[in-house]
Image (tube, rainbow over all chains, first blue to last red; front, side, top):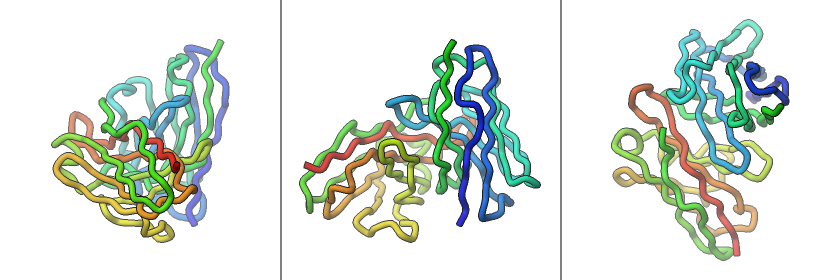
Length: 117
Length: 112
């Protein structure tokens, strides 16, 4: 079955760039949307953005300008880059399959990213 | 962008049925049959219970059911069990400046 796994640094200092990768195993990435979602401590879920297998992207209006989401089909991965992080970006970051008209149906286990000096 | 509105908490006794509401707008729930519900245990990733308003993925108990009326979606949990204690989130496609999806504020379910 399809599985997703996030990876990347867990601790960043303010103003640094967050970089996370999601590795997809057990299935094809083709013709699917792939999303990043985050959850701040004790809070709800927030959609960050998604990328289609073609490379087309769509970002949350509140975060656009700081975001780059890309896909590497040859390595079955997609990635998130978020620049100029602050403490407000501290959250568990999830990757998920889904986006646009296909709401997320499979999620990674999540990775905690803490922004602190 | 504003989240969909859910009650902060809902409780019930074992065996009872509870309903969790999710209030949106004509730009999301009211116009599209693209509503999902997720169950999240502490420290775990969300898992889909319902998709496309009423559909259940294979492996999800039929005690969970979804419905929609106007700008509101509903998750019903029948025959409440201790293992249903978790957080529940709705999610809907939203058409707007950027077509995307939006989550509900989350509901904590307590089994008394």
